[in-house]
Structures are given as C-alpha cells and as structure tokens.
Length: 487
Image (cartoon, rainbow, N blue to C red; front, side, top):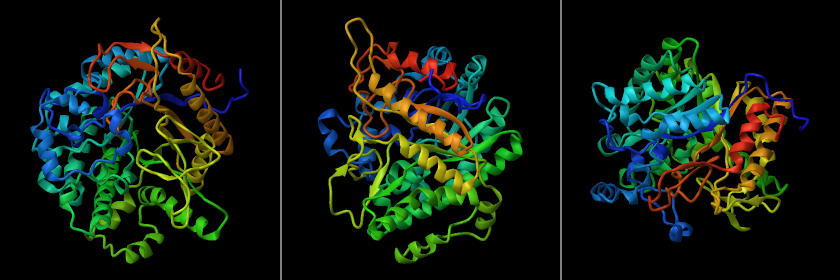
C-alpha cells in the first residue's frame, strides 16, 4: 500500500474514447460522413514524414472516390458500434465509475444542417447509455470530438462560417432533450485549442478555403464561432438538464522557458496563452486583455454581432476538462536545440525528460503544476479526461501482454494528480485515454496502442478484433478498487 489517500470518495475513475476512433460503421444506419472519415492512414514507413492533415477540396474529393476503406481506418475503427456491450462489460470488470465517449454529430444530423435528426442514430446512443447505466458507469459525453459532418466543410467552409453556430446549437439541444435522464456530464468541444495547430481537424475548413496570409484570421474567427456555439450549448444544458454539468476542454500544455533569460520566460508566457486564451473565454465569459495586442500585431479582426459578448458572458462552463500527455519548452525564437516530436505540438527537447516511442516527452510533474495553474486561475472544478501512453505492445506466445511501461507512465501521473488534490485542487475525475486499443488520432495507426485491453487488429485493418487483457488491466483495476491508494 502506498501512502496516497488524496482521492475523494466520489472520484470518477474511468477511461475515454472517441466515436471517430472506435465506432466504425461509418455508413450504417443513416450516418453521414465526418471530417475524420477522409483522413488517410500514415503507414509506419511514412511516420517520420507525417504532417497534421490540412487537405484541399481536391484531396477530400480523392478520398471520397477511394473505396478502399483500409486506407481510412477511422471508417471501421475497432467496431465498437457492434461490440459496445462486450467492451462495456470489460470496462465494468475494470471497475470504471465513468466512461467518456463522444457522440458522432453525423449520426444525429447526417449533413449537419438537416431539418430533423436521424432516429437510428439517436437510438444507438440510447442503447449505449442504457448499457452504461445498467453497469453503473456514468457517461461523460463530448459533443464534438473531431467529428464535424463533412457536408459542413464542403458546403459552408466549416467553422469559418457563422451558420455552424446555430447548427451546433440545434444538435446540442436535440441530444440534451433526448438524453436528459441518462447523461449528466457533458463537454462541448474536444481540445478546442487544437484549431491553432490543426485547422482542418479542429476547425473543419480546408486549405483552399483560406487565402494566402489569412490563416490566422480564419483560425481565430472559427474559434470565436466555437466559443459562441459552446455558450449556446451551456445555456441549453442549464435549461434542459438543471442538475447537469457542462465543461470546456483543451489540450493541456505547460510551457517551460528554455532558460532563465527574460526573453525565454516571456516566450513561455506567450505560448502558455495558446492554452489559456480558450479557457479564459469559456470560464470568464470575455476575451482577455492580452489578446488585444496580439490581434492588432497580426492584423486579426474578430467579426462579432451585437449580442455575442452577452452570449459569452452569460453562459460560462461549469468545469474545465483537459488532456495531458507532455510538456513543452519555449525559447526565443526557436533556433537552438533539437526539436521534440509531438502529436499537435512540437517544442525544444527537454534534457531532463524521457520520451515515448513516438517522441512525446514524459513529464508527470508537469501535470501537477498545470492543474495548480488552472485551479489558481479559475477556481472551478477540473477533470483530466485524457492521459495515456501510446506504445508498441508485444503479444507473447501465451497471449499475455506485459506493458510495464504503460503502468509506470500512468502510475506517476496519478501520483501527481493526488498531490495536486493535496495542494487544494478540486479534481472531479480521471479518464485514461484509450482504455481499449483504438485508431490513432494523429496517424490513424493501430500499432500506437494505449489500451488496458488489446484489440487484435493491425495497421492494415487485418485481425480478428478479439479483445484481451494486458497486465495494465489488472493494475488499473486495483487502482480503482483502492481509490488510488494502491499504485
């Protein structure tokens, strides 16, 4: 037994998945295509050349014409759509108190702008939530997790278009009304600040939708539309589910200065605002003063309507959710030192940290620091809704999978969360990313595995899809059983 006793009795232990990475069934029961359904796999031999997708209209059309679905693994996922009962039974065995999922917007409104919702899609999530509730697992539901309907990209140029605000508000209100007796915890946008790093995934617009030199303008205008959409969802949630809670969610990044040089420190502060800007708006209800000079220096003018400021002010979130995988190093300008690899972000390598198989720098203490920074700033409950280690797993001859490296990673992060709670941080829960192996967000691979549960499928879509337990399954089961005391 460790000495850790920090976690409150009602702490929500669990895991997190996303519809576009697990469900599959991309064209079943009336579902419309999402932006993720046309993202091509990055094969292992091409990984070093990988770039975050930012396609053109022509490239999307090429993907639509490609019927070899093995090139687009998010179309088939891990077949959670048909196997969710089996998977939820395993999550119950793990002891989950909660499961974070996302609703595929295109299952509810196939084109995003439809007059009426798709009943078959609504029914699927009815069944999914009923199954979770049957097992005593609290759903935490993300409304938009990189799953904008593709039609909204092709017809409206994604979130650059203000019309998406009302499309999203209608979608949110529809699912709140439908599931008001089944779901109490909601999240508006997954990693909303990712729009600065991945305009297509985060903002659902294409490279040729933006004129040369106008990308920053498009990103921040799209972010404004998402802030409004989030605020309208908050208003609807509080009206329709009075005892519900709705949060915002960001890529949780902590930025260390490369040295004590004052310019490095200022650069780190500026970079840190790439995270805080988004949470500032959604928790405080207004644009922070520091963005005024940024917008001026970069020639950005946010197009607002008269009611926008009041909408943001009157509809702030109940809690702040974050993903946390790594920390970052900021320098004046980044000309010295070797770059570290990252999913959405890259920075200078930190000589004090080790890295994962994919080059992500492992920094458990950074999580404690970041949680304190968020709580100091907002004094709202926090929720770590993604944290995990993507790694190569090897299946032994007897079928066992010894993933001590994953256990070590998670153990140290959980310890630091416990210390943050001792520091006074109000932490709702922890949902480890990818409790079951799933399609990678960044590369659409399977070989980058996160799960406690192994899925027999390779990078080319081959395999039996059989589920099996890794060593980490039994370890995390004990963590939950002892409420974080036995690590």
